[in-house]
Length: 186
Image (cartoon, rainbow, N blue to C red; front, side, top):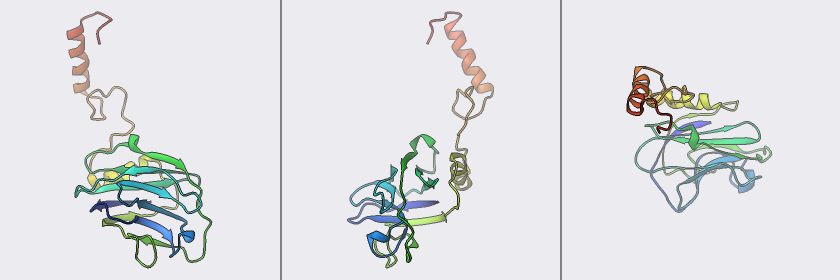
């Protein structure tokens, strides 16, 4: 599942971006939440109580927040609009709470009564019926930002643009001209 979040900041309650829960804590199959008085985002369940964590920023900008769950391991991705970074992903084993009658999906709130609300705005919310690969997560980010996520870049890319081109060759040539034929150059 994934969405775009523009978070308005910390308040004194748990904030849920999305959850599968009724009123009481025992019906929480899973949720993606912010801790009170914290910038920590966590995907967890009632049965497990812990999962992957990340950090959100309340700077007025949109952030891509995505959880991929394969039935045992959940991976949380949080990326801004300027850059996509797979290295910032966090993974953890999560045991989901068994399905209970009455657990509903809540968007922007933690309970069906609207409490534990998310202090901000959500957009482009998606729930998939399969675990997403890192490439799929990057594509959903790229679809909105229209920027290259720069994943799986070739080793020959020296300029950081995720392409091998003349600029990379020029960097090698410049280093060679500065270093000459000595093997102990940096």
